[in-house]
Amino acid sequence: MPRHVEQRGHVVTYAGGNTESADLHEIKRITDLGQVIAEMTDREFGGAFNQDLRVPAMGELYFVPYKTLMNREKARRLGIETKDHLFGGVVDRPFKGTKAIAHGLVSEAAQRPDGWSEAFSDATKDVVLPGFTAFNHNEAVIAADKLFQAGYTVRGKRTLAAGGGDQHVLNSTTELTGVLTGITQDEMATFGYVLESNLQPEGLSIRSIGQVEIAGTMISYFGTQRETKGEDGETRYGGSDLYIARGNYAALLKHVDDDATKIAIKQARTFDNAAEKHLGVVASRRNYDIAQGQIDGQLVSGVLEQSWRIGGASGPEVLAIEAFRKDPALQVVTGSSFNQFKASGDFNVPGGARIHFEGNDPNYDEPMVTFTTLTIIK
Image (cartoon, rainbow, N blue to C red; front, side):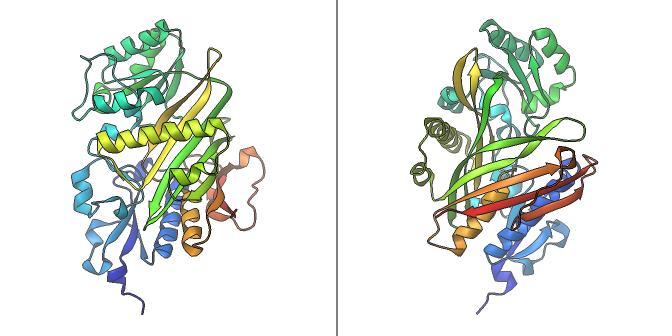
């Protein structure tokens, strides 16, 4: 006998005040994946969360937030206590959900926000690229100068920016000072600014390593990202190609032969374990970008950033879990997400793809399509 709606509960998307910064194609993709999660977990899809319309008959809510939730008490008031209550993650300080945690401070006396963990920085220093996080303008300049003195070209990153946005390759502290004029001290003190050794573009590879769990079904994966271009000529995220195994990282490693992927998985696991131990992260979706490339001719590998929220690779993640839940014998699939812009040529959507969005996104003002493909392996 089917359960009543109030017993099954609802899946809802949660903007948390971020709709003004979300692209239309992202909103549509998040909504579509929320519907998939609802169907595979025998829940109703409730659309966008609205506190004013929340009623007991909706039952327990499962949230699909646009961003990492950065206030644990607010999350608890929503009913989010564990990773089983959301697709994404929760932290207790705003900076913990950003790129800021990827590097340590420039000195023991450096400015830091409440909740900063030296233990986390110590645990992850060997799995990230050389760099620092600064929480005021003066220390950002000091950090950059240290990297310049060590012979590095420097990449500056605003920590709230998604993907490769708001980043600058810097060759001097004078260039950095110009960039910092556009960042308020309040933003610096709250979210920090990252100064990191810059990898040479030749041979650069960004690997995606992740683990996701929905309703007791866990997947782990490795993959790579693709780039594409829009009408403005700007390079944009084009999608991800993933190899996805049922189970934990140990299960995934049974399918890995090359050393570069093994190194990336080891680095992601080290970062992930440290985050759980020292930062108290609660997350059902844990994704890590690993850069592998060269600095002055030397091969290097390091975690660039974490993603404890729905992301570009989440189409394959969710559809893979759906496939594993339908077929208990299935162990491995491959999946790809795509962002295609008209400027890059005619759309090429294969049969069987799940289309999340097709049309004009006002933030890009050009035709685009986003979709996911999944292939059963064994």
